[in-house]
Length: 345
Image 1 (cartoon, rainbow, N blue to C red):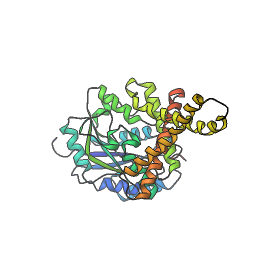
Image 2 (cartoon, helix red, strand yellow; image 1 turned 90 degrees about the vertical axis):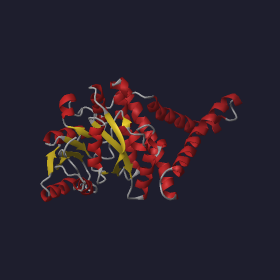
Image 3 (cartoon, rainbow, N blue to C red; image 1 turned 120 degrees about the horizontal axis):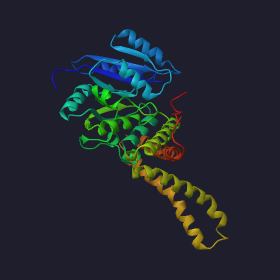
Image 4 (tube, rainbow, N blue to C red; image 1 turned 180 degrees about the vertical axis):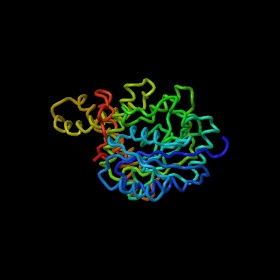
């Protein structure tokens, strides 16, 4: 790499009035000598997000606004990329805060690794006790399992990248985000990049501050939508299937069976032989066992203080069980039309 190539930051925006200004500020504060532009693709927000965006644009000519009437993330990203002009494209979210060296480190890694897409760690954090507990669950391997961008991994080639730092020419070669995939579109784009013979790279030194949902209802809605679209990926692509995706549905089955057994077993205790009651007793132990593991994982999480650790423990079932419901729904019926009802008003 020679010089400092210009950077276009592209951001889909919908109902982010409380976070947008801080996210844009973290972009404009990047310690990077190259040119910068920020392209905000504005969906039909029901709060004051678009007013905030207009004020930001009026105060700085580097901030460009494009309309995204349908509000879908992949459409927003494609509109923003097409409206951008720089040779490096960096995806950002309104819930994200970039550390000051994110751009310089990311571009250095992009060329050092000869990659076409680079991503780093999602450094979840919170402003309230509930959000801090949810953030701690994001960091825990018990929360999300495999993805390196949640719990970390050594630097190297990756299946997918969180957000993404791209060479612009990769979009000309493999195409833009798939607008049929309302979620998981980043994974599918990374698949096409890898199929084209290019490298997707994970760099754990790239840590992006991220504010997750701040209440359990929204977290559950997000988790269910994520599970549904993950199942759609598994339906469409052999590479999208993983044994770890079967764990939450098995957990859901075990918990549901255990809850039913808890109700049924006392009612039939005197009427059936012991060999019939034994499986019911074992089934009853599953919900209690899962609750105990979730509590232990919450206490072992990186949350500060007992209250936040207990909230992290509560976040695990709000992630796992709705995700499992969504995954089963998506595998059977597909994900078409599924939205995150915790975000879309």
